[in-house]
Length: 169
Image (cartoon, rainbow, N blue to C red):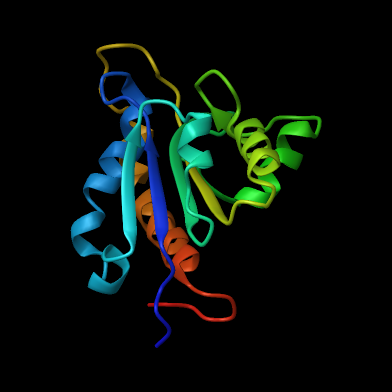
């Protein structure tokens, strides 16, 4: 077995803002079940909203998985998009799944790639949300989809930890 590469897991959202807390809930239920060799290379960071600094200080050899609730998808729908594809999706016409925060994640990824002078490896794993207001819990459609969301995040982490041409399981 090849040693897994380092992976940063960025968990975006706010538990006090309805469906925006979905990534936090999914990751909380996921970490204990991850294989020890994956946990040993995992750097988990919580961020209410993704910031450019979260991507700029990523070590060169590390991959990144970003999780967040998004608008532009039906509540509970799960999407996994390679980070290298996000900037083009943001630039394309039509509906694009994006964070409910200030800058679309694809724009932050594009800026980080320019500043780092190389592409970011990894993926964005999002879940469609409906309610992002203060004081609300996660809505029923998003809550029902949390197992699928956890599975998508775990798959993204395994893929991100794999060295080129291998898959660590």
